Image 1 (tube, rainbow, N blue to C red):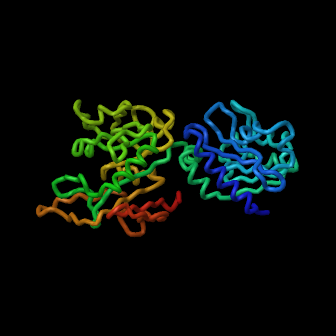
Image 2: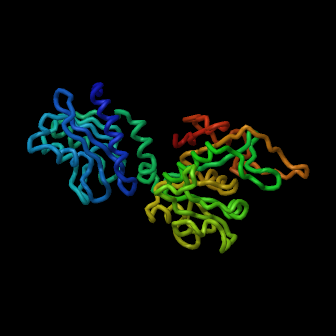
Image 3: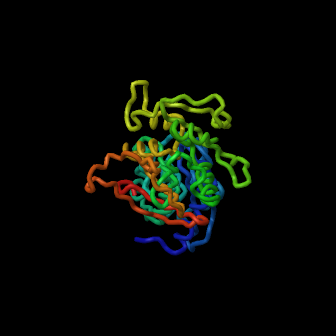
Length: 352
């Protein structure tokens, strides 16, 4: 059984609706109710923790009995548990919905199983419709559900010959304004931004998300500094609109002597998306620990080479790859032209 053209169109609309909801502890979900003839009856989306889920939001816009025989198109499998709200699967059954089309299975231990409950009640169920698009929308939430930690994007900028800085350590600016604007837009989508003390001391970054005209985006990521060296009192990051979190950066993937790991600490603070900007030591540490879910490599058409004294500033450092058979293979999912620069978006094979 497959989705009709109208149902696929409704799923695209549901994905757009999902974006209207806030990104947070709960997933962004959209829903569209179609009549038996394929006409749109109602639309809904989830507006945040404690509010009606997308399916119930759409049902509430119809009179009693108005959804009988309808098709519900939803970006995530209707939930099957009672939390702050009741099970959406039950709400759809009680409303008399005849068919449910959804994109992704719910990975939650408590909330999964809605599809089975619907089928047991005689409802036609179709899954996997525009699953890739829905997965992209929910990538951070899915990572938290699957791995119990935030979704991590590791970003770096490099010359064509793989350097992150000149031999003397200067690195502003390797890339052009279009690439830098793209980085700031992505910062604004993150919950936390991470750099090492080396980058902090060398570049004195503000770690804010800024528009090309210099004004701040409404949402600012939490600044996180990793490294044993202290943050100067006059560092630009101390003027960040959000408080600074400074940790030693050790044991990224496990428990440290001082309590929970960084990933668990950020997760418990409600951080779902981490944007790692570097430098090379911190970026390599996340990659080495297997904590990178997405990689953004900005390539500038310039050559830096090594210094006359052999000083070198590679974009990455030790990854634990000592032989070619241990190389860390990636799946390239996008290549974008940004002015004179290129952005390569890739994912580790095991999480692609």
